[in-house]
Image (cartoon, rainbow, N blue to C red; front, side, top):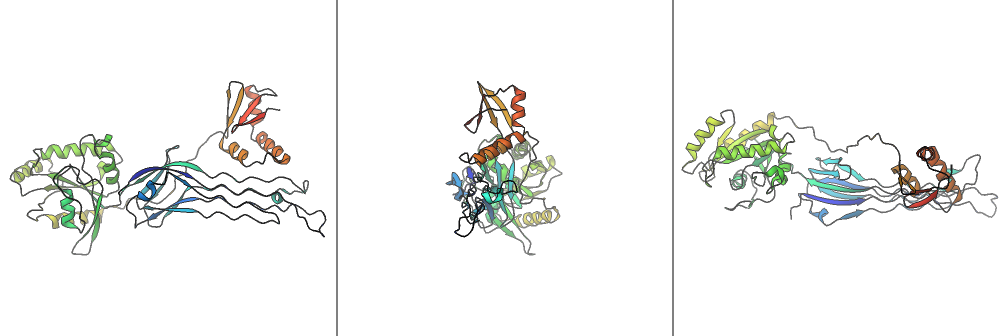
Length: 418
């Protein structure tokens, strides 16, 4: 099964909880705090693997959840970090955060890895909170929650040359004629439902990868037929080989066919219409082919046009040599496996009034809340001080909050005191 697009939810591992503990030994008076830190939660990692050709292994993973870090223990014993979860994906895989619309990764090199969801930090044990003024702190942190994201994972085939054109113009036959690939070939539209790849080798030992891509129809850039699925695969290629049925075997005009496909490519965008192009005049063994070719050449005199026929076995050597020559002079696109970070100049929190309740939201505040042990008095005091230091109390007063008003953070109710 070929799968080239899916959505998956990833939940990285929560950090292990820190420990509140004191040294208790028979001959050690006034033993100090010795609570260890929790281990870090597991990251979720995607790794490019050139041996994979489809995202089918991910198709049935609706939710990927990583393990929690180990809790800290007494005697300053640190919790173990949880091992990362590594998911192999094919080369050419892109990962996008559906909530922020940011590109997280574009994996184009074998064994390249990217953390798509980062595990939470382990909570600190009470030994960390010891100070000169507080030698016996009764406070520790819970582990930080791991990142949760909904990801769009797409595969764009990695090929040097892409065969494009209307359905049934002979793309699959051309690929089979010049490589060892054996795509399904039949006389009905959309025989090719998935990209087929073939390695083309020349006599001078040059080689390149050619992709036979699903056929286009009008409206492809809006998703009609297999349009968008086709076009995203074509965006990876360096050279487009535009196959035209010059024999008009289905009664269409070769000139109109060519112009319609060019319109779809231009409408799709993404600089697809600026790629180097070779026009293949296919089915030259048919009766009308030569006359159509003469008209076509007059209309597009500035284009590279190569006549071929699989029946007569002509033109294929010229085609592959021309492809190789253009590839030799085409600069490699700067495409790296990477993570994209986007700087956000955002306030650390927002406060809105919902009826008579002040609702406070913000990543840092919510993280602080989830890492606070509210069954420890010192932890509660620290939480209140942190909120005040972030300016929450001042902002509440500025918005008109009065002592005794109800404040909501992560479904937990507080009473405002200023």
